Amino acid sequence: MSYSTFIVFDRKKHWGDVYQDKSSSDLSWYQKEPKLSLELIRSTNVASNDAIIDIGAGTSVLVDYLKKEHYTNLTVLDISENAITIAKKRLGKSAKSINWIVCDITKFDVFQKFSLWHDRALFHFLTDPSDRGIYVKALINAIRPEGHLIIATFAIGGPKNCSGLEIVQYDSEKMIAELGDNFKLVEERKEVHITPANKEQKFNFFLFRRVPNKSNT
Image (cartoon, rainbow, N blue to C red; front, top):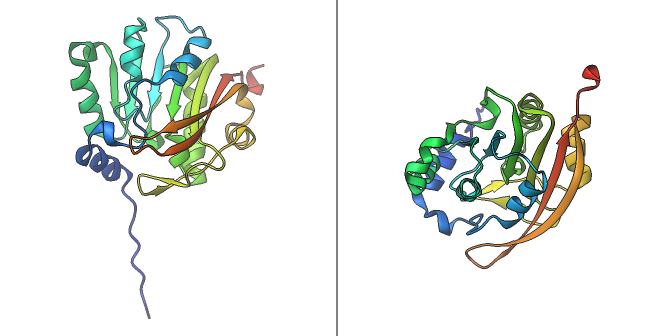
């Protein structure tokens, strides 16, 4: 009888190592200014004191820009404690007014309702349908009715992997199918991201509005 050895992928260790071994500005997803994310956030007209969460933020400077624009109710979530530590150190004293969460999104225990959920490039790493299902349940629990979802993924024809991991590419049809009828697509925007290595990556950004469950209508 032969036995096969299965190695279980440790998502937390993988992303912890990424942010330990490389400078943030060398990572392929690095943005000096998250222009499109900011444009979409502004377009929602969320109030400055509305609850906003950035999912899988890594060391993104989005939270820095939101602070500068006087948003005051900010939460940042990432699986990597190293990434959170780097971001907090960068922000200095300003970090004290932000809610920081080190957590795998598939284990996120939603603790409040948010007016806006932002995710640039986490969702496309969820290649297991069960993980995507857990993510969507968290969305439904976390976003208040009429709240907003901004989610960005690699586009069809974009990269097939990132950080040594396989990803899932999305267009609006595939994304709508994943989210179900709890969300209505408001806008889709395309972006060609230029990496620090000067390579092009095709992204799709989707802006959705949370609608009440049928059982609540």
